[in-house]
Image (cartoon, rainbow, N blue to C red; front, side, top):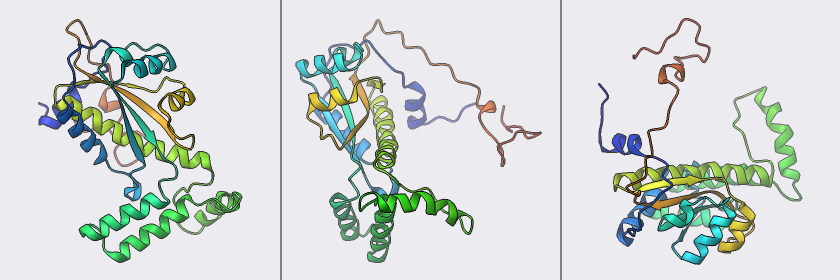
Length: 248
């Protein structure tokens, strides 16, 4: 017998919906969903995301063309475009740390520790030299002591903040379902065109767009199939050998 609560039920009820009713999404509800997305976790509390809320019909029509004509872009009353900033570790992060210090969430010494380590994580200059040294130095350091991965290039930085921003996108979709709203996450689009349409800085990336609204009554979004959990879980070590997931 599954143990359910409202959050688990929202996760289980989420579907990717492509046909939407014309009913608008209330501003207060949308604001709450964005607040929830903004509360998502991120490494060092970087918060590398921005949210572009697109309701304009003409803009959504252009976005649909950039998104391989996916109909949910114009059928849903709202599209939220998630933007990831690989330069969030610079000035913006100083503000995050200052807010954390003033609120009492982090003591001064922890703020200094985070600032130092985030600089080491992201910094690659000058002229990529520090990134080059990290790329070859980290494997050598691992021979002596455990060492996490680090960002060694602008591409690494973009991939890192994209992954963090997807945590925010997942939070947004679960929160939407808890309000009875439906979503459709989209990664199939021409990112450069989306940036041009919405005037997003070229330095930033767009990991996902999410259509938001109420499913049309004709929508038959079935519960998508999943490989059984017993085949996905490993106990202690990855090789199964004779270990079995203990729950049926």
